Amino acid sequence: METSERASSSVTTVLEREFPGRDKRTLIMGILNVTPDSFSDGGRYIDPVSAVERAKQMLDEGADILDIGGESTRPGFAPVPLEEELRRVIPAIRAIREAGITAPISIDTYKAETARQALEAGASWLNDIWGLQRDEAMARVAADYAAPIVLMHNRTEPVYANFILDVVDDLQRTVERALAAGIAEGQIILDPGIGFAKTHEQNLQLMNHLDRIVRLGFPVLLGTSRKRMIHQTLQLPPDDVVEGTAATVALGIAQGCRIMRVHDVRPMRRVADMTDAIIRQK
Image 1 (cartoon, rainbow, N blue to C red):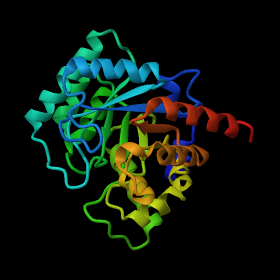
Image 2: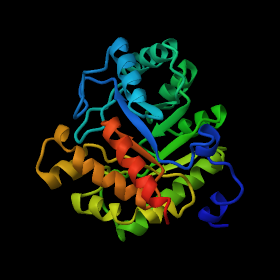
Image 3: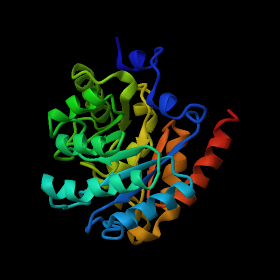
Image 4: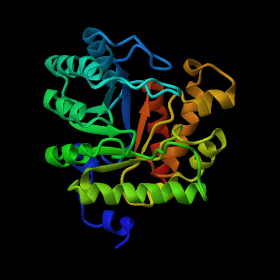
C-alpha cells in the first residue's frame, strides 16, 4: 500500500487527537530557543524565567505549540554536547510546566537521550531535524512514549538527481523507517526542511511544490521563519523579514500545510487566520 493511502485511512492524526475541534485550522508553533547563538534571537531566553515569560507571551499571541531547542541549527553551527543541551532545555521545560502552562511542548533535538529526558520533564512532542537519521534510538523513544514526532527532510549535502522527487522519496523512506520502529501513523508529522541541505533556488522551488509532500497523507509542518531563503531574497537582516515570512506562511497554508513554526507569533497567527478563512471558501 502506498504511504498516502495508508495515512489517509481511518487513522486519527496527531492534530485531531491533540486539538479536538481546532484540528482543521492552521496551528502555530512558537519558537523558543534557549541557546546563546541562534541566528535571530540567541541568548534572549536561555534563563528559565525569561523562557517562561516568552512562552506566556507567545501563547497570548496565539501559539498552539511551543518548540524548545537547545542547539542552534543556523548555517555553520557547532554541535552542542548532550550534557550542555540538557542543561539548557530541561530547566526551561520544567519551569514552563511549573508555571501552570499546559500547551504542548515540542523538544527540538535529534538526540534520543535529550528527547527522553525532555518528555520526562514535561514535553510531549519531538522535533527531529534529521528525521531519525542521526540517532537510531530516537525512533524507540518516540514509539515508547507514543509522542508525536516531526520528521524533517535533511541530507548532508544538497546533491540530488531530481530534486522534488528525491525530497518526496526521502520523506517516504523516513516514514517507512518510523513505522518499522514502531511509531504509529497517527504520531507522524512531516517537515520539508526548508533551509536544510538545499540551495537558495532549491528552497524556492520546494516552496512551489509543498503540495507534493502534503499528498503523502501526513500533517505537514512548515518552518520558514526568518530563514536565509527569505532574507537573501529580500536583502534584509533576519529580524526584518516578517513580510517575507508571512508570504511563505500563506503559500504553505494554501498548499495544505497544517502547522507553521514561527518566531513572530502574533502577525503569523493573523496571516494564518486570514488564509484559513479564504481557503474554507473553496
